[in-house]
Image (cartoon, rainbow, N blue to C red):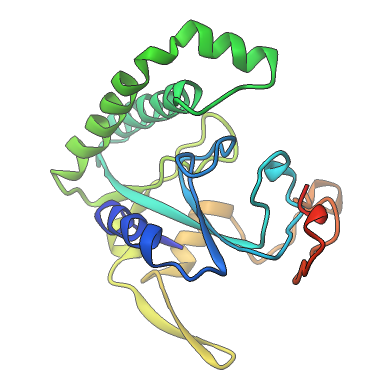
Length: 219
């Protein structure tokens, strides 16, 4: 699920108080070892063995919630801001107060960055995001989107908004205005499967839809 920054922040505030008990809002502020800057909504009492979630307390079936921000229309300026925001994201994650790294590399990074500077890094990141959203542009992007370190994916705002309804089986969902442009930007020729040797599975175990009393599965 994707939404513009203002809607994303509003959603996070509401979800903290109004999610049903069957769901858990997972952010780097609600889960100690969660290391992503986007939120997830997880179903409690389920188990999804995603490789990236090993070590987390909450590993239920989930949906990602991504914030989209305005970004400069000029490519060079956009790349500079993306690099800056991604660096600040790493600084915030490595210095957050409740984070206790269990790897030597991460312990060293936390030491060098100085955990006491967390609020400084957080303030700089929020300023970096706020100042671009205060001046709407014709492009948007999600700072978390990149399959590799130097991947810069931006979208024409008109391809995202206005959203439109589509029918899927017996339900109606709202999707971006031009899904073909979005998917092409993300994946290239998305209608062609990659070679078998390049296909990646993110699941490393059995998906459990009802843990029941057997909470040990979620470890």
